Amino acid sequence: MEHKKRLIKYNDKMFSCATSIAMELIGGKWKSVILIYLIDGSKRYSELRKLISTITERTLSLQLKQLEKDGLITRKVYTKKPPLKVEYSLTKFGESLAPVLNAIAQWGMSVAEEKGEVIEG
Image (cartoon, rainbow, N blue to C red; front, side, top):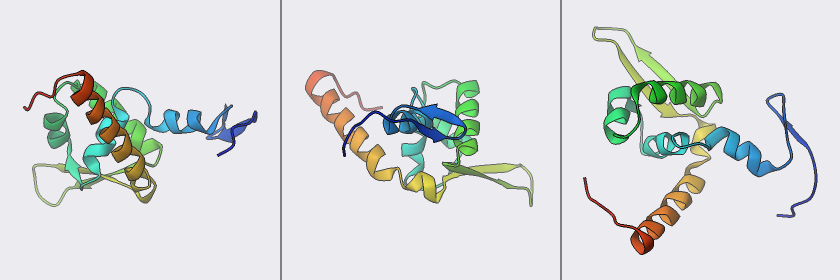
């Protein structure tokens, strides 16, 4: 891919690089983590909270809302019988990120094994 000077308009924002668009959608500490846990199927809020033990409830809630707004995940509410059940899953757009997220996770694991310590939980 050739990298040249340009402006890209996405969601009424201007970006100088396509990488900036990607980071707008999946950047930050938690978005990619949430997305990678949804690759293998729908999860309830409580399941995500258990899987990502170091995230606060407020942050998880805000990040889920942003990912839904950006069209990467869907939120399905089941109201047939109490208690209310909410499940989050990847959209087709979100699924298109799977190869990228898996590559990032694989790279992160190799860094952890070489330069850090993997602690099973």
